[in-house]
Image (cartoon, rainbow, N blue to C red):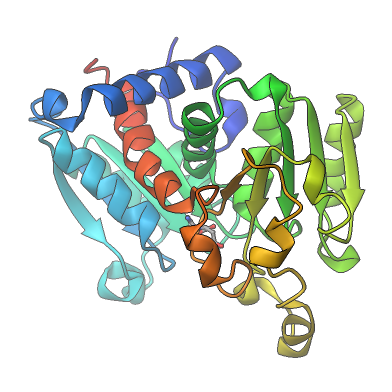
Length: 308
Ligand code: NCD
């Protein structure tokens, strides 16, 4: 069937070849520059349905569509839509299907974008559902590694922080194990370790994986360090969040022992987990990563819409 017309709810919705097609298309778009794609989506409309706060995901989707000459409609705050009047997701997307050619949805409830895709007659993209999945962040992350480091199968990738609630982490790990990397290192407090369904999946696939609670212990062997925010909004009580929030703080001193060509990634927004002094270190790539987000989404949407 290919990517045209397909929804992207979880990374497994795309085959490995399809993921690679998105990444190579995005890379080419980045190298050529956005001007060459200005008319690509001239008659297309993107609907952004954001039931949960967002900066990068919503704006990078909008920027991607606008850069390809398309238009954007939608909401960034569900309280300004008919959701406030009790409208169901099924009804909203059935209507939106007549107003737009493609839609991206973010929702605090796990599974909401999946439900939307079942009722929509246009492709639906999951822009993050609760503590579950965030597949377009994964495309962004893979593009960043490809551009900054090259071959994925030569990398030791460490993911550090909130592995329990972090949806970017869940989508990234699921995908990395399908693409095969040299080694995956998971670093988290025990209470915020990877959910057991994902751990089982990794074990079944025989993934080369190690788990730690201390970043200092392993930083010197890492090629790609992916830092994440402790997900305050998913905690059941504030006291636990306060106790765990500053478990990992990457600063210049910690980086002294890291490889000179290691790259530091973060889906953003950051809290304290990366000190501001690190921003000047050439290894810091998180703003480059945010830039990659626009190209990853340009490539994804143009392939889904069949305009390339
Ligand atoms: C992430 C998210 O929303 O899951 N942000 C993003 O999309 N770049 C990460 C986070 O909120 O910690």
